[in-house]
Length: 69
Picture 1 (spheres, rainbow, N blue to C red):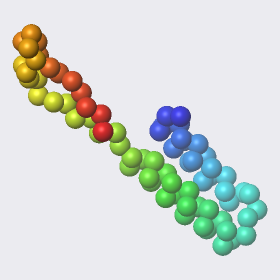
Picture 2 (picture 1 turned 90 degrees about the horizontal axis):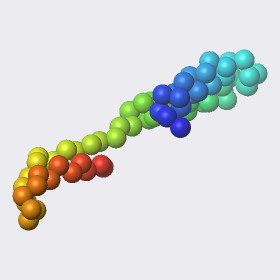
Picture 3 (picture 1 turned 180 degrees about the vertical axis):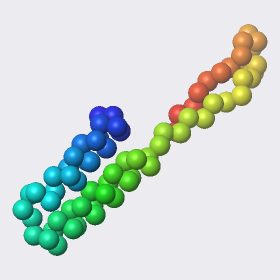
Picture 4 (picture 1 turned 30 degrees about the horizontal axis):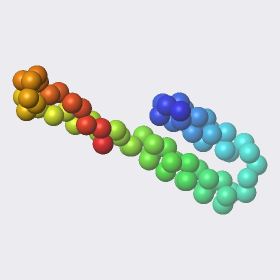
């Protein structure tokens, strides 16, 4: 599932929590936990490091590999 879709679903979830009929203390905890989950999802990033082109192989062709981490 894409990050955008997950954040949208969590946003809808937070919007309908008040109408679920939960006790106030439960409702507060569910909203806090949902908000934290949205924050973690939004801040989670994929880092891509691109190496400088190098000519270290034997045939003289540039090496332009991408490292994902």
